[in-house]
Image: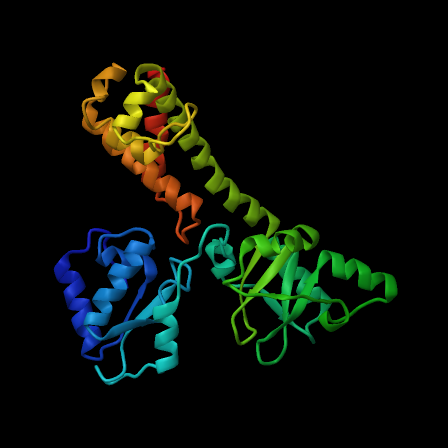
Length: 335
């Protein structure tokens, strides 16, 4: 279903009422978030949605924090609240599931880990496999058994190695066995493997492929999260330099911007700057900026930095990243 990002409270109530009554309600995780006017699955957002779904006797299948943000989930009634039932063990696992902690960015965070995989079967000809690889511009394809389970991969490398031994005619004579990557596996745990092999197949618990990731995907993901951090570091540096040049260490302690036991070299955090400069210290900076604009942007910068540093499953929105880039450019023009 299609939902506007500006979904109203009545839109949400209508959908939840339908689900409670046992009607089929399927939507993407992004659309689910939009019902609460949210964009990302922060811990606060997850708790808010879970709580309101629980109050109505609803849950999602699969769990809305276990899948990619553009994947579909169904709103279903929990046991005893409608015609559909949920396995109690499954419900308990959903309630106890936590978002990734620091340094646990997961495989499923990559868009390519959630997209259709082009595959061939053991008895397909090498010509068929090469044609498909050429048509799609892929260097490898998944190899499936008759039930659709991933057995391995046929690649330019495996074809070359097989050709040294004989002249292969079918896929079964020229494929390599590969390890199945699980969606919840931390990316840092598979980084070295991806660098060695160049790719990895992501499989669901039943062994069927649900995505493929490459070293290029990995590099793009890390780059997309690193670039905003560099922007944020520039913002913090420019604010720190101005604050330390205009406000004494004793005054910072007095304003509780830094701990009383701090050393002379200590400085406030991003969040502390926002609160400090919302008060009377703002004028001491002598910046030609509206105070409320500065406060709003410092709060947004601190929030985005927190999301990036803790590897929340959904990256900041494009508009948020553009905002902090403009804020950094504004500060650069003032310093």
